[in-house]
Image 1: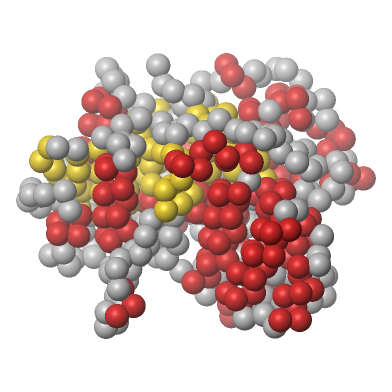
Image 2 (image 1 turned 180 degrees about the vertical axis):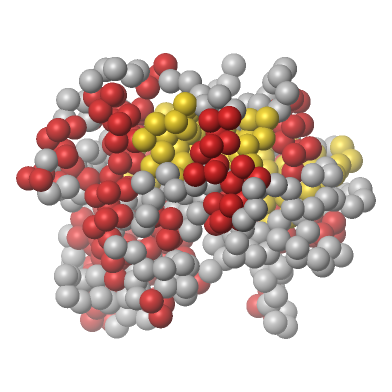
Length: 480
């Protein structure tokens, strides 16, 4: 089903009213991940697909629709939830699919562009080259209908019984592949080979789907370091990798980039050069966090709740010294301690500066960039109690998605963190209860304030990503 022919793109904060985003619902490929390949495919564990869909992710889609595109769901909740519905409302290839142009399913965009013969032929050849398919299989895929071909590309399954290449289970984490920075789209370079196919698919979507047509000259691709392939060892720090979980647009002029297990210093350095040269932002802060699976991305350590409130893991370390030039590689080259956090801010035509702690940076953003006149508040993972701080950070207590300022989604399993929200004056409500109140007009989503919405998480949390990861915002309102 076709999407609209254009979409407004502009994201200048993490907390402005969310107007549209890209998502991908769990597909059949997730149900085919085997234990021996789970970590190769970047999953912490195998998941039960039906439970992940029906008991968890479907709630996310319904909630997004009530906030962003209520006409698609209002008055239909009982029908959607009935046993006879067979989840058709959530299936992109079904006539009953919700087909929103605000809560946009990646699979539908892929099917749209595959309807063009030239793109289908080229993309099939590219995918087959990556996956090592035979020529006969390539010709078979070219002759497949666009809707079915989109499903095959994503799930790896030719039909219910036959897989022809690996699934791409991480596509549910749509933020990692692209991030909107003001009215530009930054296409990222994921670090792991397991994400090569989804990266290719997203590039074709952004450059070829009509909803992005007016922004094609504002799509930025991060290039690889010159002649990397000639360097001995190809050390991870030398590779140019950058993922959306490490990018936060905290104000119209300020982007944060985390250097992590997935985003290299080289990747951050290329982004600094491109974004400052193109005047997309005025300053970029690099937060170098420990290169560990525990943290993986910056948004597993910190996300924003309100202009004066952040949820985070207690600061990991402090910064030493002052940078001398706008070159991230030069600044971090002698920082060999991977257990330290280093923070440095690069600005146009001004000397860079460093911050002693993550809290100091966030306080500066709240006061200087966002104009907060009240003390900056920090909600700590696990309420800063050992061992719950580390346990709950592992299950994404710090990885929240703001639907509007002060209204955020988080997992229901992080009890101590939920308690910290309550101590800071937040209302806490389970998503199933909220949906009923939204349907009955007992609650107006646009009038909600200071609310943590608890989402079921038994299966989703196994994938090591929260709702910040599972969203690629395309448009947010500006903050007054």
